[in-house]
Image (cartoon, rainbow, N blue to C red; front, side, top):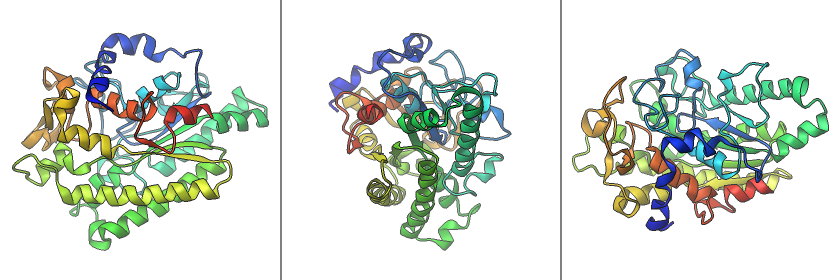
Length: 365
């Protein structure tokens, strides 16, 4: 996407968007519901409800949307913007609901520190792994069947027509493989064999969702993990350049993910898996930040230590003033401005990062 077009997205960021038109379901909704699975990149508040160190329920998180909501950003996530593009409300956090206030617009099961592997992120305390999130989806559908869509044929159609977004895998590296003092995985597996382990497990998980009736998937690949402030800090980058060895891990995983999704598209009847490449647009932003109006490509807007990556954003810490000029919000996560660009590259009119079709077109199928 050209820089000029991307910059046109920045006016979408103010509080009025969040409070007004953003969460209104439009007449042109492209799918009946949106179900989101994954980690802190798309968590919109589930972390508020479990005992975990991975939290975003305090200021200055959410500073540009009226206050903290549990989103790991100064504002909206990629999933929030995806919902807007397909004409739906941003689905509520699963852990915030009960059987008395279920919604038919979908659900967000994502939770900070979650991974493909069960052990990933355990040092944060409680977490909800991808397997746990799938189990929560099963519980949701049982409640839907009992309370909202009692006709089984109608429920099956509802699930099949809904859009499933999966953003998982980053923590299996950041909070597992790249922490050799806490996890043995890097001593057991090469980078290639670990990627294959993740893909083998992910395949089973995606097939589980398929057996539960899901048919339309957007599966998000890994971004350039070697460029996030926490990795720049832990690897003591002197120049602020991305850590190539970490980025190579992400590239290897993404290549196997593309192969997996191609295989699933050909073997699971009626399924449609779209691969969202976030690595390419993200590395483009980092390498040429001024093209999209950014001035800081490696320094966290809110963080501590080298590049703001030594210790993430603390409660009541004063963040940078010009947040839309920063690529990274905290030690691990992008700003709302970057999230808007990443979402547009998959769901917007000139989407180029989703293959073989855009997320919006998939929702309409």
